[in-house]
Image (cartoon, rainbow, N blue to C red; front, side, top):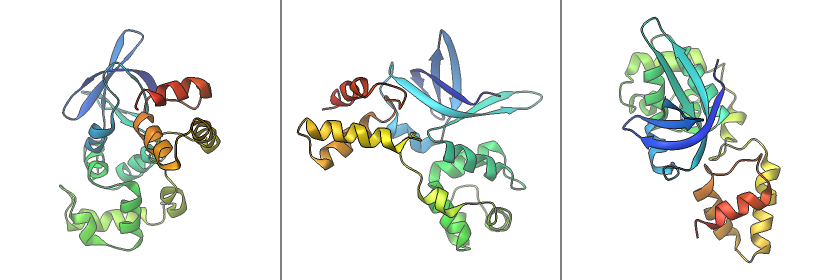
Length: 196
């Protein structure tokens, strides 16, 4: 099983991207909502992946956070929802919005998603309502970091350089897919400041 991939973003296609890892290009299908937040070509990118294997094909699906990957897997556990339908659902709504719609039995919100009819919406509610952790999904961040202390340290470091709270937040958001919590703070600061 391929849990995650970290490499250089070398191509952006209509429904997928190519990440180069030591000379090997991995094509990974992503939610279309990611298209506007991807880093420039040539920059590093890390995705949490789901490896889907069938007799006639092998497909990698990629997500910016573990929570989104887990939500994707829960979607595919629903009768009639395959990986491509699940990725389409995540392309149109955030996991917070989906969880809220499922918890509140909001069928109209679910059927507003392309390819989701009333019967599928009902199955999503019936089969997922007891599987979702509302607290977990509501706390999902827009960045792929599991260590909030790292973001706090990075924010503090930028503030000491004279940037305001709002400026710091915007800079980190712009660079979020180019920095990693395993990098030294100094390295991440340099990466973030390139977005000024």
